[in-house]
Length: 93
Ligand SMILES: [Zn+2]
Image 1 (cartoon, helix red, strand yellow):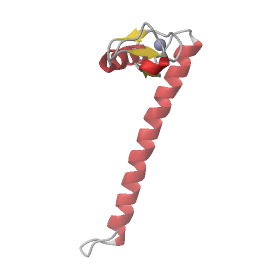
Image 2 (tube, helix red, strand yellow):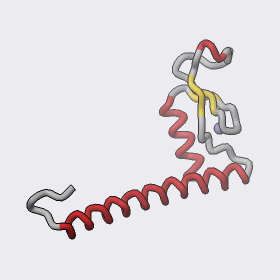
Image 3 (cartoon, rainbow, N blue to C red):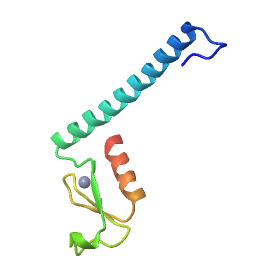
């Protein structure tokens, strides 16, 4: 969209800037995916996915607020924050 005080060059610059942002975001996500694959290949669980407590899942070890890693290790985390911290630590180490 071009406003009356803008030129088509402004519009083009905005489009390019937005594409650069998306490219950077995609590159960052691809790097995380590559790192997770690297960890799994090395036998380390990156805790890339988890399932929260739900009564109908019938997981007797899981309590409300807790999550179980569904990636590889099946570890139980006490909160979303614990899960995110473990995922960050796995990606960082
Ligand atoms: Zn895990």
